Length: 92
Image (cartoon, rainbow, N blue to C red; front, top):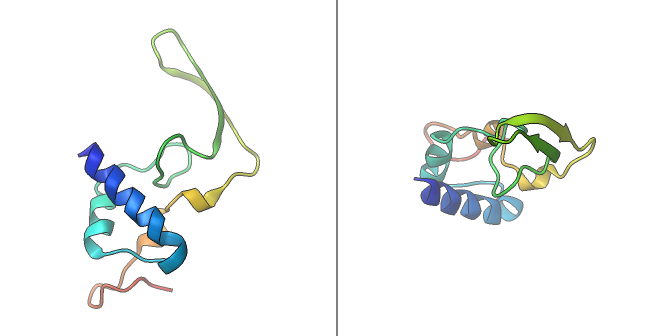
């Protein structure tokens, strides 16, 4: 399931800048995945909002430091994936 999510998200992000849209299947596959706890969106790899994470010896997060300004272009937010029910087109 994680591999499918990564493939779908990679395809979404590849098209995002050019088309600002995705297929209904892409959107539904992403909606089934949890959003990032740090930025509230979907992205590949480490969250672009996170500057530094401090972990304890067991790997649990103790502290998270965020960038004051961060690159949102690498994140797809759930509200950006709204589609019209009957046409499959993205809302403006």
